[in-house]
Image (cartoon, rainbow, N blue to C red):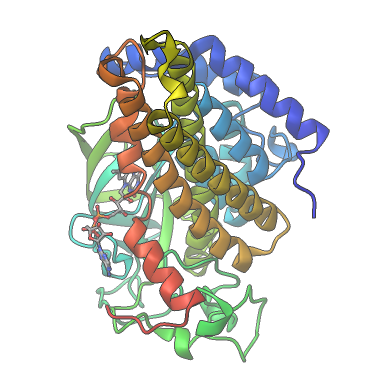
Length: 452
Ligand SMILES: Cc1cc2nc3c(=O)[nH]c(=O)nc-3n(C[C@H](O)[C@H](O)[C@H](O)COP(=O)(O)OP(=O)(O)OC[C@H]3O[C@@H](n4cnc5c(N)ncnc54)[C@H](O)[C@@H]3O)c2cc1C
């Protein structure tokens, strides 16, 4: 067991930390309040290779893994610059395209994702489906060689900055015909909605399904032809929900028929969320990730662990940032007989308690990332969910505790802590809510029945 970063990882951490501190939370907030983006920071991070640490070297990336990307996310957040687009663009889109894209898609998108010149948003959430991705209503139908995509998505981050968006759509059993939810192929036992781990093969290769955990029969990354695997077994449907046969499309954000409206969110962030409307958006055949509908489910699952791990890393980075601000303040602020307010246990203990929670979450993040980078997807799925839960709670606790410890200063923009309240609160909801993770743990770790 080794809890140390490698020398290269430690150098990356120090370099990203230095970059983040050069910009700092003041820059982040100023951009957010001006309705601008953190373009300078993003471009510099891209030029220095930090955005592409997880992209294969053959496509201009650093050839590292999600561990390295988690370090980048954590350190930028710890400097007061939690960049959500790191999660959607290099973590989700970068992984999905690197692992499941065609060679042409890899060559087209990965170099830009690696240097930051290309940003790809990720659109799965829908107003009617919410946490239940089996209810996705966005549909892709074939029209000659093209696809026509229609539907609605909500809370999609960064669409205004992105040149493409990775859209998750439902494909009918017969893509030329009508859609019948419940018909057709793939399903996930550990589904994306409850945080199910990762998928292996494709629905058609018998190995198919995504294992929430070994005990729900979902098990493994299947190669071709594994007859004995899980499709049709316990994993065939999820709690009676309509079966999801997902396909992922890389859609240009300026495609005719794709419109967006910005959601007003109570989060101080230079990154925005959008409602997306897709009205018969026509994309060519090569927009379909992997070039085949069968690539959809494993491609979708491929993005989930990187998403959870990097969003968790952003959370602990934010928690560290808040605790650092608070500790500096409480160690020097004196209002009773010359003693620092931090000498009072009523102030120090909550901060210490939050620090414990942040560090515990951090351990789970790097456990999950290490498992993921070792190709141990199922274990990474469980650890990634635990990490995401723990980091979401720890970040919210740390920021709230920091605000309290700073007193009135905690609510000022100048001290830069209350500006993070909305973001850490959102971290308990997105990308997968704490309740859905608890459902996942109850079912897949504790063996409880599913109630929904
Ligand atoms: C800041 C932000 C950025 C986002 N960015 C993106 C993005 O880039 N792309 C994208 O696709 N989506 C994005 N999302 C959407 C996010 O993933 C969803 O908000 C999240 O998955 C929850 O879905 P919902 O909001 O529809 O909640 P709902 O599904 O309506 O759930 C509402 C509440 O009910 C609880 N609940 C629901 N079902 C159960 C159950 N079975 N058991 C117990 N509790 C349950 C939930 O936990 C939640 O607390 C973003 C959201 C936010 C806030």
